[in-house]
Image (cartoon, rainbow, N blue to C red):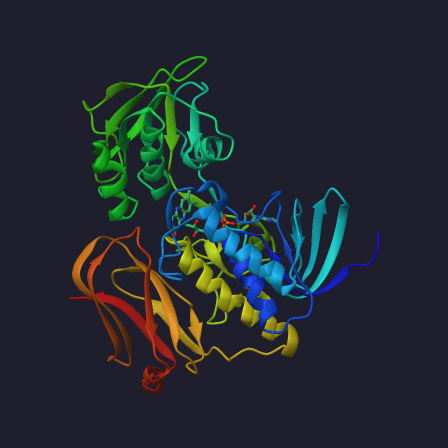
Length: 416
Ligand SMILES: Cc1cc2nc3c(=O)[nH]c(=O)nc-3n(C[C@H](O)[C@H](O)[C@H](O)COP(=O)(O)OP(=O)(O)OC[C@H]3O[C@@H](n4cnc5c(N)ncnc54)[C@H](O)[C@@H]3O)c2cc1C
């Protein structure tokens, strides 16, 4: 095998995060930037998302997924990023040597800096272990989105959706618009998993019932799905006796969560967060391995693509800086999530710059505040009229506030 290709920044994944990171790495002065994408086109999940709603933060207008993706594809091309399509990264070492497989065979790349931007995959029936037969007609919502929007294929006529994540909600509306009947959406949790806006726009506007505290306990059918059995669940997720009911349908769509594509990160032994299932990063999105960065959905599941883009842009600039100088700000202040919050990101900061923190609450809250504290004193308080687990919260804290940090510790929590 020939020696490794030498690059300054290698970006793994050509979705919205990879595109933005690669464009900004090049814009920040990195020499050779290569973006590696296993698919035959860039854009990640966006080319199949033909509904609008992308770009409302970055461009102040609602674009479709393909429109949003095309802007960044043009940007990486204009800036001279090398895009290698149909190229899968199968191995990555702490010395930043990547093994990639494509129709050119197996190659190795040695990178000055690496950006992990591999996104997420959907949880499947196997991941949730639903009982019953194994007929055709059980799909993940994203797979159906691909069949309908890219391959122009209809997948079913009478549909039940399990899980009220945003993908499932968007597909409920899409199936109705394509002439299918959506019988109901069943959600095991006491609250929807998707954002409130999508509940209204995709379910209520189309009179689709949403059953909370409810799940599919059995799938029926031999060749093709003929129906599902729904049952209510109690507070500990156990089935409530006497609540089983059969619903006739020919298709079951699963929208039961996303799993970050973290295999490369785990094999590398990166420090991982049990709350996000992504790598633990500092303010530069730098992981625990020198020169390896992470952003986008593989770092934390984003509700809107704009925030994945903004995060990835900062990551690309930091990766270029590392590749050029080998230096980053010294992140010595620890940030921890306290009462009411599942996590806070980044985990450490330098205090030298303003930071856009991202976090999510454990449960729906009204008229509360997200409060940053150090040594018992409040550094920043943000009033939140409404918070929900499905919605990511983004809080900017100015660098002046970090002057008052005590013992390099900040805690962030929800307060009245
Ligand atoms: C179904 C769905 C609906 C959504 N709807 C909206 C919406 O309406 N509005 C909105 O603003 N946001 C929406 N989002 C959120 C938005 O799409 C995501 O935030 C965004 O796609 C995250 O970008 P990403 O680049 O991190 O991941 P992805 O888009 O998943 O891209 C990751 C890329 O990495 C590639 N890859 C993975 N592993 C490897 C490897 N080992 N080697 C090479 N390549 C690899 C994949 O092929 C993929 O192209 C939605 C998300 C989903 C899943």
